Amino acid sequence: MVNVAVDAMGGDHAPAAIVEGAVAAINSSKSIKIFLVGKEEQIKQELTKYSFESSQIEVIPATEIIEMAESPVMAIRKKKDSSIVRALHLVKEGVCDAFVSAGSSGAILVGGQLVVGRIKGVERPPLAPLIPTKEGVSLLIDCGANVDARPSHLVQFAKIGSVYMESIMGISNPKVAIVNIGAEEEKGNALVKETFPLLKNTPEINFIGSIEARDIPKGLADVIVCEAFVGNVILKLYEGVGATLIDTVKKGMMTSFRSKLGALLVKPALKKCLKAFDLEEYGGAPLLGLKGLVVKTHGSSKATEIKNTILQCQVFKEQNINEKIKKVVAKNEEE
Image 1 (cartoon, rainbow, N blue to C red):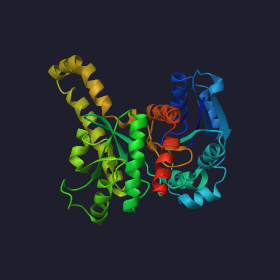
Image 2: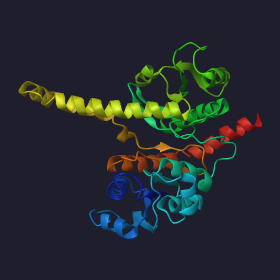
Image 3: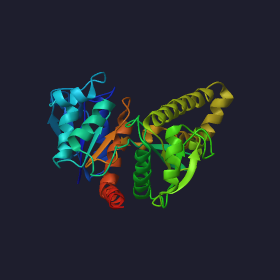
């Protein structure tokens, strides 16, 4: 069994969407047990709405909630009985293999490092979501954890991202690119200019050079390396354009009798196409490089994303990603 601690109180739609997603996950897989952490009565009330195997869900009481506006460091230190801290301790103590939350990003990032801890040799754990592209998916690393990254951090992101894409997505020798404002090597800000030659001279990765933002959706690279400010802007723009495009297409199909008739004919293909660019289908963003798996989902996550994020944890554990990251980092330290 893969044991997953889930923050039942985090996110805009908690605890209803969290519980619904958790139930959907265990109904999809008999190899997962979920520990729902949070206000016991509220969680149990939500659980009465569904049918599921009771042995696959356990409720862990937590009386406090870390709010979005709170100082992450202070909240982690003071709110010991919060759903986030209690759930993280389940991972630290080895009770659970993974932690999932749609709550405060700052608290999850701080708590992941303070409570669960970093793998020895990992300089800065990056947040790394999968984003849809024309060719399938790419890994965006980092999208929110390290705003003031150094060149050595970005090189390590590239190595960790390559391990992830090979193991989780089955992509052999994944193509790595650094986000830039042009394809030429001499372009970019100070960080990119300093990092580019380091990536170019890293034999463990398949570095293909710079990638401009407009080329990311084309799937030209499998691992897209950047510091967190740039990565977060890319991710948020992706979300906004994707949601707007889906909404615009749906409205356009309903403008006239002819368009409605056409919509009926193309509905199956269109639904499949739009689904491929819905970020909810790809789960959350793992904080890679910790001793246990910590995954952050969108604050607006609904049941589908929660379900997919939990199932993502199962694959992560089965592929033994942490051990592979340890080997990569240990090899670099030896060198």
